[in-house]
Amino acid sequence: MQLKKERGQLIVLSGPSGVGKSTVIAELLGQRDNIYFSVSYTTRSPRVGEQDGVNYNFVSREEFERMIRDNELLEYAEYVDNYYGTSLKAIQERLDAGIDVLLDIEVQGAAKVRARCPGALFIFIIPPSFEELSRRLHRRNTDSEEVIAGRLEKARVEFREIPNYDYLVINDKVSNAVEEIEAVLTAAECRVENRSSILSQFA
Amino acid sequence: MQLKKERGQLIVLSGPSGVGKSTVIAELLGQRDNIYFSVSYTTRSPRVGEQDGVNYNFVSREEFERMIRDNELLEYAEYVDNYYGTSLKAIQERLDAGIDVLLDIEVQGAAKVRARCPGALFIFIIPPSFEELSRRLHRRNTDSEEVIAGRLEKARVEFREIPNYDYLVINDKVSNAVEEIEAVLTAAECRVENRSSILSQFA
Image 1 (cartoon, rainbow over the protein chains, first blue to last red):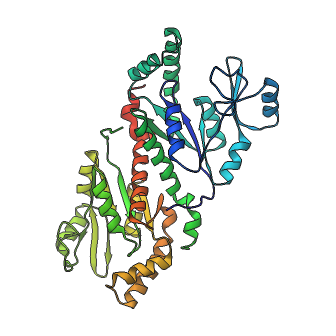
Image 2 (cartoon, each protein chain N blue to C red; image 1 turned 90 degrees about the vertical axis):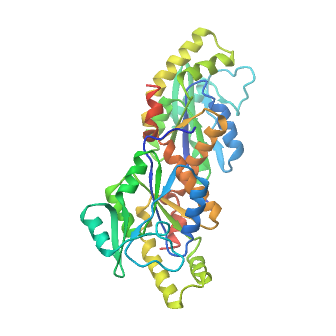
C-alpha cells in the first residue's frame, strides 16, 4: 500500500571502487520514487566531464572549513589533501518531508554516520568475487596496474568493515543488485515502527 | 544473486480472520521457490471441503497428546476444546536444508515461537481499515452477525499484539501484500549474517 511516510529513511551505500556502484545507484534512482541522492561536497577540482551539483558540490577549502565549523556536515574526511563531506541540512529537510535519502560514502564516513544515525540502513555492495573486481577494474581501462593494485588493496581493507553493515548486496548483474536494494528499502517501509500512523487507526 | 542458503528462514504470519491471509499465502507460495508452508496439526474434525495434509493434519486427541509429551511441537494451543499445533520436526528438516518455512499462526502461538526462535521473521497482515475488515467478513457470507461481531472483537485484541511483530503488511490488494512480503523475505536473505558464506570468500 502506498502510504505517505512520516519520515524518510536514510540509506548508506558503500562498496569498493570498480564494483559498479554508480550504475546501480543510477538505475535505482530511475526506478524508485521519493528518493534523493545526496551529492557530496569536496574541495578537490572537478575532473573532465564532472559537473558541479551532479557528481559533487565543488567548494573552496575556506567554504568547506566554514561548513565544518558551523556543524553543517553529517560526516567528512580528508583524503590526499582534499576534503569530502555530506551536508546535514540537505538530508534533514528531505527526511523530514518523508523522502528517502541515499548516501554513497566510504567505510570511514559510514562509521561516522552509524554513530550519529543508528536508525539508518547500511548496505555494502560487493562483486561476485575478488577476481571479478580485478577484471572490472582492468576493463575500465582508466587506471595503471599500480593504481589498480592500490584499489584492490583498499577493497580488501574495506571488506573487513562489512560485518558493521546491515545488508550485503552482490552486484553480479545490475538488475539483481537493484532488485535486492529495492527489497531492502521496501522491507524497511514495512517495519512496524515505520507504520505507526496506520497502526494508530487500529488502536 | 541466487545463492544456496546455509539455513532457511522461519517466517511467522499472523492476521485477523477475514483479512485474506490464505489468498496471500497461496499467491506467495505460487510465486516463490524454496519455501514450505507448514501445515498445522489439529484434533478438530475436518469441515466440508477440508483435506487432511492440506488445510490441517487431522489427528486424534491421543496422538496430539503424545506429540506434546514427546516434545514434537514448536507451539500448540487449545481453542474450544480442540488442540492446534505446529510440528517441530517438519520445520527443522526444511530449515536445515536451506528452505524457508512459513507458519500461519495466531498471536498466542506467535508469542511462543518468538520465545523459542528469536531469529524468525514476524509479519502481521492487516486490512486497510477496520471497516474494510468488517465488509470482508460480511462479504464471505458464511457467518452470522453474532459470529462476525465475535471475529471483529477478536481482531481488536489481536491488533494490540502488532508492536511485537517485525513487519506490518497491509492487504489492500493481494498483489501488493505479496510484494511486500516478498521484499521482507528478500531483504532477510541480504542481511550480512545470512551471507556469511559469500562474505568468507572476501576475508
